Image (cartoon, rainbow, N blue to C red; front, side):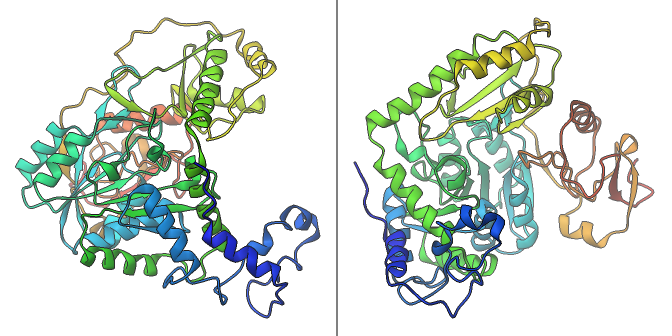
Length: 482
């Protein structure tokens, strides 16, 4: 089905056909004023960078083209209402958490959530009950919260108001979360989902289902990650079952957290990305997936790494391809070899490299594959035991020892990282990408976590910290290290 419904894009195009004279912001004046070194490159898109003019609507009180574009997205995603986000999934996560709960509420939170979820909890003044996810035996990657873990948490904290989960993980993989969501709804929990990497799941066929269809109340998606949209363009979807009280609270929160001067470029790209996805035929989707499979087969001829194939225990996104090193190279070193040959993966960890494919032509020519093969030729392939990579953890449910807001008030000091075992962290330690904290403010640092951090440092990970990760900020108390 071809979609020609582009209300916001058409409104902007009509505005430009009227040959407008700008006596308003932005200062580039419809693209006539710009630095000469990049003017030619930007010239075609600058006319779309407009402001709240007659006929172009207002994101914070839409009645025209923006409202129609959001309604078109809601119909496509089968949501009660969809909001355009111009600050990435981050602003959606902030708004849904702030809008759905009251200060002081307890909420269950997937331990490996994105940092924006934890920032939202801090802003909203909520108490986080951390749920440790299950891990895949072969890859060691976190694959989601089990129903059993949630049941244990409910037994321990029966007054909790909500469940915040991430689906799928950054690698596009998850356990089936339908039983988890069903249990949460049976217990009257609000279910909020950071579905940043699932904006294309509504396409069906070989893709996992969206949690919006599995009973979640609010779902946030980064359109720019998997759809052809500009960076920071995202959606917030509200379920048909969510009442208007919460819908109003979320809309009010969005007006607080989103810019009062939202980018029409980003909003137009959301309008176009939705229309693009809606227009894809079954034949086109099959060709897209066949292209991914062809690349996987080409890469599989290189013995210094292997493609992970997820079995039917998991829901997996066919547009995500995880490569595992089979040599002494870390994933970070393998990523560097790809980059030196002008092939740029999305991310790496100590053992893996992630490729993300798009909803278009997917290919990797044989010459590029041969260059990678030659670059890796001298590395000896090692045999590894499968099933030895997952952390051996029980169904862990815990509360932070010190809340993030309390951390701000308590005295702190810096100590060498290797001496931090037993102390309560006063700052987050976040490898980026994917932006998932290893340590949270208020969390006690144990030996296993410290070993994980040291391993990532040795492997070459990049961290989002205030300074070089040689020391760590901790709560300054004589008793904190036991």
